[in-house]
Length: 206
Image (cartoon, rainbow, N blue to C red):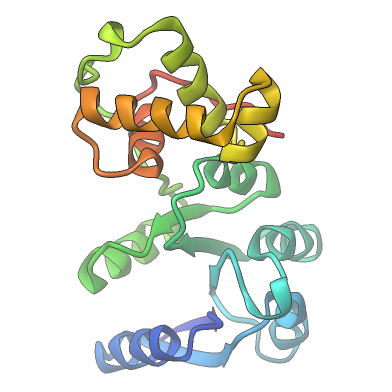
């Protein structure tokens, strides 16, 4: 039985993951907790094989910060981070913190289980860059639109982008609309994630 410490603050998601993993007959959930900041306390008592941890947890505590603490104390313990938030800098921050793997919550339970096995086997599972060297209409974007997209990938908010250029938020909103219209993405966040995972933009950590 593979022992997993589950850290997830949303009760519905936590319960669903608990049931799915335990029902598979392959995993034992040692604890299912909501706050990443106390994860090390539970590791001490039951030493799991892997920590499956959300990035944004109870009391605004970061799973990324908790990962750095866990890896400092238990360098051989596998940590897999997960998130449903389209924040493109999370991937780089997870690498820096020492996470073994990183997944988005839009994957299936079978894909999650596969990622867990890969991680336990010493592989690092992260969103991969696309093998296609194409970006929808990327080179038809204006210089300013590419700059704005780059700032989004760097983690800037709409207000911060407006302040950066000395323009109104409505102007930035127009840039966002043009970017989505030209590339066919339904949201600026999904466009930014694609830009990073496809290798067209290498975000900076703020």
